[in-house]
Amino acid sequence: MINELNQLRANALEQLAPIGDDRALEQWRITFLGRKGALAALMEKLGTLPKEERAAAGKLANETKAALEAAFQAKLGAVKQRALSESLESEPLDVTLPGRPRPRGRLHPATRNLREIYRIWRDMGFQVFLSREVESDEMNFQLLNIPPHHPARDNWSTFYIAGSEQGVLLRTHTSPGQIRAMRALSANGTQPLRVILPGMCYRYEQVSARYEIQFNQVEGLAVGRHVTFADLKGTLTEFARRMFGERPVRFYADHFPFTEPSAQMDVQCIICDGAGCPLCKFTGFLEILGAGMVHPQVLRNGGYDPDVWSGFAFGLGPERIAMLKHSIEDIRYFWGNDLRFLEQF
Image (cartoon, rainbow, N blue to C red; front, side, top):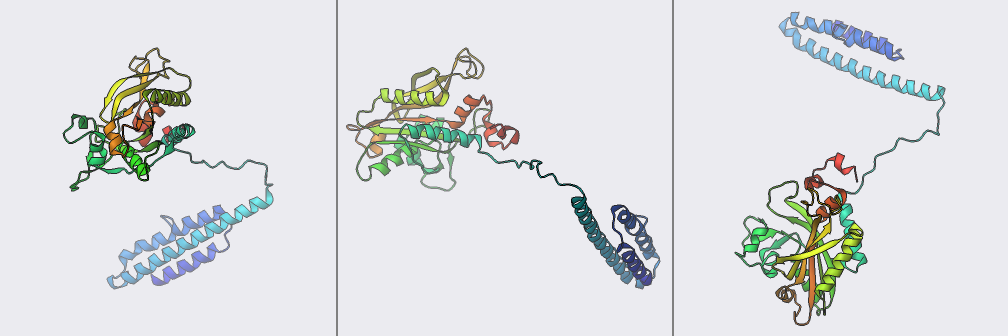
């Protein structure tokens, strides 16, 4: 058996050496390595050998198979390379053919929308101020006129950090950035400020077509002497014009603990042009942000004297604005990583 295997290996390699085309190579594989080939026939005889000879014969059979398969793969590569070389030498190469296009990545639609919002506010004189995503309960709620057990806390389903004794949490809105921005700029003496505070927010909510547990917000804050509600209304109306074009907007009263007075701002529905549709709940308008005059106590907490300084603040949802602009019906598309959605932008 040992001699037969050695003879088979030598014979197979000798016949493989001169082969130069695919057809002959495939025939060689069938002859020696196929299911009914010469090696398979020898390996079937292993069971008939005496027990003391089986181990050595089986080992040699496996080594022979491995050697022949390696030789076959090497010869296959050589044959393909030779065929390619002959093709390049014999056939003309058309260098005028266009290259194969490579797909290019692109910005995520949420990022594109955020950059558009940044550009508009930058052109209107606002600078970007970044604040932390992990906040204390004091900064996220208490300094914004939302003390413990305040009913307004029901509007923010909060992720608290387990084991934290001082109420550490994932911020539920970007409004804590108002305090941080005012304190940072008032450290060396109070001065006027105009900032936007973009960032991710987190709320423990049931995920649906209109709600996610994480989402972007862009907070805005302007503080100065003699800032009025008319300044707020004119600034936000101009933002809506630059973002959505010449469309009617409307303001109506609302309530937020950290602003007084407070308001919501709507823009005419882009889908139905104010006629009424399911997206705008047949009102003809869609809410894009909440705003108001900064509460005197919030100004005081930020280091500003409310008898001298006043200001307005607003908070808008970039994903909601993108949904309105592009008729997107489900906010979950932004975080689903579905290329069918992302490649449309």
